[in-house]
Image (cartoon, rainbow, N blue to C red; front, side, top):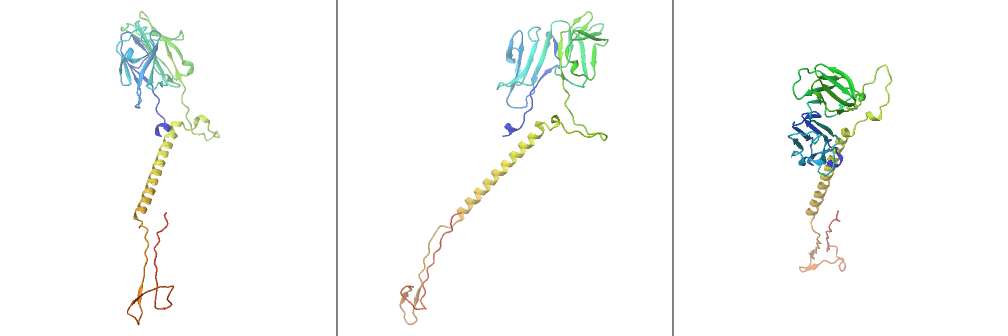
Length: 288
């Protein structure tokens, strides 16, 4: 019942080191954030090999996969987690392997709307001049002398393909950067304005109220089971202490004052007031 009514955590894939571009020959570890006993494995889809499991191109251990040596043109592609039952994770990551000398260090997962985005242009060999030019969708944004660029309070309009260029070293591959919508928050109503009616999106999410309901149902079922066991044992105890049905018949014999011989009392044949006939019968109580 708990498995049916209580929600489970979403499974995502993490990348270490946390970036989307790598130099040829670098190692990378991908891990499925698995908190269940179902078991997850890393899968990928590349132009060179199609859709395959970690065991075919990496070192698989539990819910993680390690690629000790990345190849350009072979290991670039989309990576995700998949359960043994065939269910796929809700998040995927894009990994690009460069055979050149420059890469763009950017976040693997989408950046939340309103947060800052920092991009770094890195060369395989330390440049004499770290100045780098940054581009979005093929257009120059600006040139930073330190090789790092920060976009403050990003919005959905900041989504796109980004790349960088270091003079005398070359250009990095392009990486798509996504911006996720900021979750709505319920603010306190202003004293000068009339509070508006709550919108459907501001109601409590499913994972907040569903676990208490599940716990209440389990507790209620446990109480009912204990009540049934108690009633059953009480009824069984009563049946064990009940005396068996029996019939008792009593004949009383009296002696006449003037005679020494016993006379059996008979209600039908004697009218003597000194003679008493008694018949006692004990009937069992009706079953409960």
